[in-house]
Image 1 (cartoon, rainbow, N blue to C red):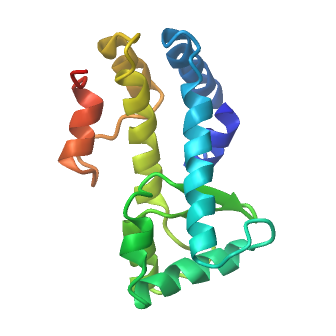
Image 2 (image 1 turned 60 degrees about the vertical axis):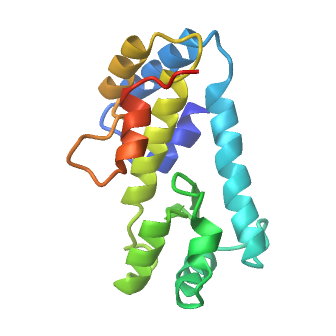
Length: 176
């Protein structure tokens, strides 16, 4: 499970630290399967959007998906399709493809070819969403979880482009 998330985040400077950190976070929740549910959410979102774009999830190439996502910007469909997909990423043909609206718009606007495209906004959102799910879990001490999430690179720094409301969700435990 951890390798799937790590592959979507790209190269990690210390793979063992990341794996151990996610293991600690999962253990803090009583092994409630946050990582498994998170992966299921990512897969469900990406497959749903691909179907809405008319793509077959079984045989679509990375290039086809990338081109179709870019075309959705020109057709005006991107916003409605991708509005709730900030952290949705998929790995096809050895390439990470982001369903994050900002990534898709930037890739289209700059005419970036497949293989030289950006996925940084999607990866940042994925890190933040995963951190928030652990930090805001009912069984978890938010401060301890924040420390671990920060140590393994899940908490976005203040200098990154990340909405204030999402950053607040990570840094301040929501009241239940």
